[in-house]
Image (tube, rainbow, N blue to C red; front, side, top):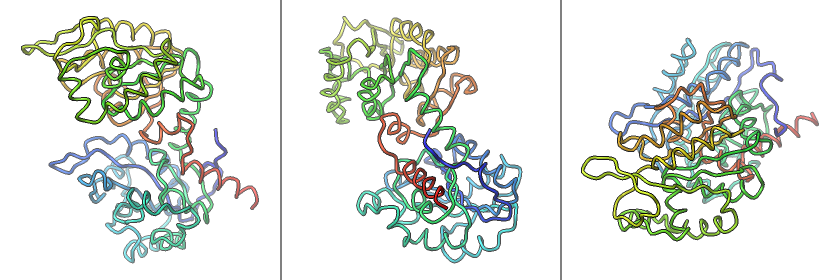
Length: 417
């Protein structure tokens, strides 16, 4: 693992600790209430351990962004959920770093904690600012957030690996000027993904499906090229794109669906992957569709057929189950089909059960992946459930992550102090 200091290396007694977590949660579009608490639960160990030292804890986090504005809401419910799981009151103030927030931070007593307002209320914390302005961490010291909060705190802890791909002040700037540590969740996620990437037990199997195929295509070439993955099992839209790349015609409805969503630009990368790694990429043998309210399946040799294919079929499921049973390491991103529909849950359900019963070391990640797993299995049967999506994909491809770079830099700086 990268050299990063942990919270066990610090004495936070009586200190004011600034903790960046990622508790960005799925929100019901009508009620605006949290519908999945996985990330909130994952943040509890770090918060609990810091407060156990009688620290004065200042928690900062985000909810939503410009790209999902409907989820950009106040975080009072997040504070309520944290309070419930911790068994103590986590106060909430709907101010990010202004006078009210500063006054609250200054008034904290040992053992108390406050969650400040949604970081994404600040323009310097939204993705459009990051993409347009492109500040370096050292240039972020003059941002509103850092300028207002840094003088009030003694230490900084980051436990937000799910946002590790974000080059925002809350993620990478405080490390420039404050003693820094990685939280429990951050360290666990780095360790779990490092095991998958650098030293997986063999054979190492990647199970890639779902509708967000940019994640799958963002990692396939790299993990095959460097030997991280011995086999990739493809399903969902990823599997359909691979079938098209193999020269199969799926049928007008499915092909129109792919084209209308501009997913057809993944066909050429898929052709190149099959050219170089055809023996390692496992394609569906059959697909499932609905006819007259009944689930039906057809072999790939029977294509094309003018239907929307919503799941893998029995032959594919059996093949995947056999491969998973013999795996030493299993990484999963994306369900096998439209599991929310009872007719098309079979592939996802059986693949998840095969993973749960496998003796291999299993890691899953991504919001829809975790939701699907939660529906069909006990998550305790998975060795590690990663809260990250985009950050996880970038890490597995060996790409630089702004947060990891900032934490390494803070570690190197601490050696000279």
